[in-house]
Length: 405
Ligand code: SAH
Picture 1 (cartoon, rainbow, N blue to C red):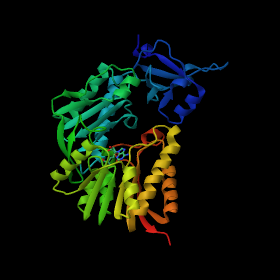
Picture 2 (picture 1 turned 60 degrees about the vertical axis):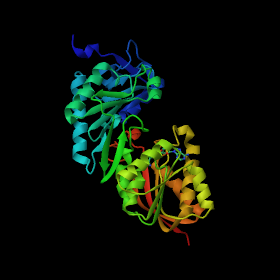
Picture 3 (picture 1 turned 30 degrees about the vertical axis):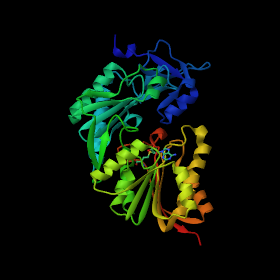
């Protein structure tokens, strides 16, 4: 029997067929017409359902190969537009090409994303390199399969020979995928903290303590871009462990970082000491602090806004946009004439055009003229793939701000 006949089939609706043909890589549960005897995490053949009287030959119904999840709202994650007979071989090649892509395009750092799930054709895996340490996270039933984990860890060890490979666990994701609970920790070696550098700035990394995977690597190129405009006094709002603050410190007279998380600020202070910088860290709710400071007439020459994702779904878009508007309005009012606004949104559900409209509306209300200097996205180790909108999420606008005359 050939391997191909062992691969189960899943048939999907006409609507989902259109989306897949247009390049999308997800099929939602509501679009699955039939998935009989398919085990969680299986590699499957995806076919268009032969609804009505239509009797098309199988070859015309075949849409590609995918990983199946028996519990997630995303039932299928497309893997290839062709039948896959050698799954390990395909995954190995994709891992190799993800590594080669970073070798070619990532510079000025020893910390970057090595594998970014769908953006690297490896749905369900996220891997980051932090100097001599790698961290990975598994997001789906297929990506959690013992044989595939072994393959991933083996390939990563071979490619980087790291001191350790650490697994990070998002318990919410594991629950949604009905995966067993798992402790976080090293699966190779024992090291869980290290030091990285990006753009010549040094950072401490605790692979298991911090939010996300230790640092916001997706902002790395935006840090360098923002640093170009550093001058006078800067306010870094939602500063986390000081990514923007530390990059601005070299060019500014004074930098203040604000965050509501005390552990993040403690790490920020350790990072500042590591770089021999003095930065003021303030533990506060950013909304309250911006209101108080703008009421008190405080002025800054550069303000960074990098809030957490306000829109977790398209349904929360309106309230998210209201949040972005309020922050940007306050910041615009607090900038000195000719000041620089660096404003970000990492909500996938907020489109670039919508984000620009919000900044524009805030500028109107604040009576400011905003000249866009740069519209930026995530760093290139977090590839944004055309046709897969899910891979593009970070917006970063750098603008010059004046009083409207
Ligand atoms: N700019 C950072 C990343 C920011 S992530 C960097 O480049 O590394 C978002 C941050 O917002 C988190 O550190 C979180 O603690 C903080 N945060 C969330 N809600 C907040 C609030 N209401 N006020 C202040 N900080 C908040």
